[in-house]
Length: 109
Image 1 (cartoon, rainbow, N blue to C red):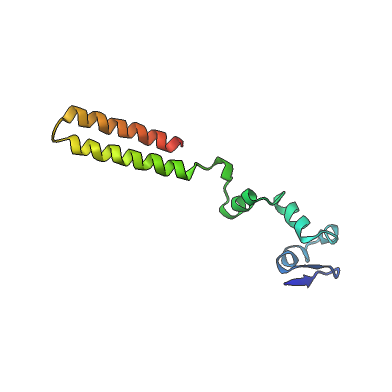
Image 2: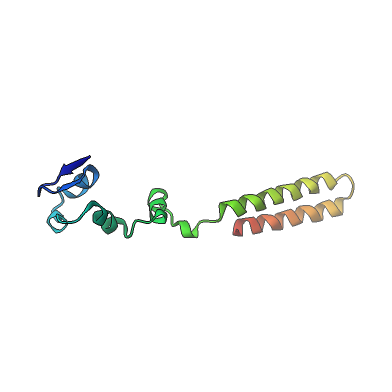
C-alpha cells in the first residue's frame, strides 16, 4: 500500500519504514521503489532474491537433482553389498567400499 514519505513522494510502506526517517533520505527522495531495491540489493534478479532470502549465494550451491540421483545409486550399491555378505565376504567388502567412493562423489556433485 503506497504511503507518502516526508517529502510527499509516494513509496511502498516497507521502503517508507526503511528510508523515510533516515538522515540521508534526502538523497533518495526522487528514487522509485525499484531504484531503492536495486540500491539495497543490486540488480534484483531471481538469484539475488533467493540469495537474500536464504542468505546464500545460489551459484555455489550443489545441484540438488544430481545429489539425489547419486545418493540413490549409492544406497542401491550399499544394499547390494550387504546382501552379498552371506555369499562372499570379500566381494561384499569391495562393493561396500565402492559405495563409499560413490558417497564421496555424491558430496562433490
